Length: 221
Image (cartoon, rainbow, N blue to C red; front, side):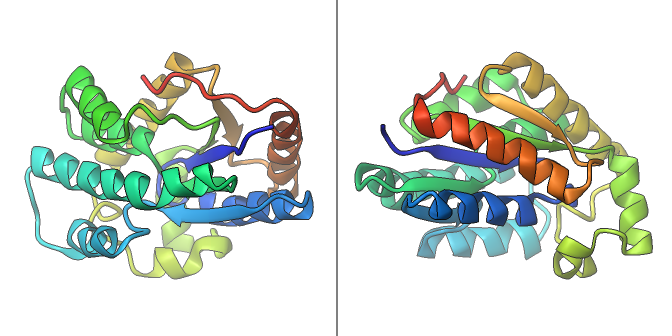
């Protein structure tokens, strides 16, 4: 039984943070060793790139995609692969699907080019499972105005550069995630973010239980 590589995806405000933490807690309760990372970030270089991407100046779509890929390459090489090699389960807040959703579907870059470049920088390392928290961009926008998403209140109180993008952009990203979930249905499990948090935790927990007894990696692209 090998280590699991789990990623969480979804538009900003879908509730990834609390579900990721719950998944890590569950695996540790199962006596498994777990390491948690975030994208962009997780390394010294990655955190510098995160600051540029989320709080820096405006940049071209290709520059943005390249910076995400650079942070990802560093994270995989210096943190994720070593952790997996040591037998740790790895849980990551975002991964390659984020670049495909935001820079391809959101910004309009070429799918094959972005997918191939990211596959190269991560040495084709794919997650065992990707959990996609699915919610309409319009409802996230409404939640920001009404402060409905209490579990991510800190993040929502100070939106970053990508969160400040238009609703039209966020809607394209949402549809991009839907397309990715259909394209990679064997690896991506889409979970409605409209369910109550305990229901979401139960769905993910059940799937994790199955994965613990049968670990394997799907193709990245």
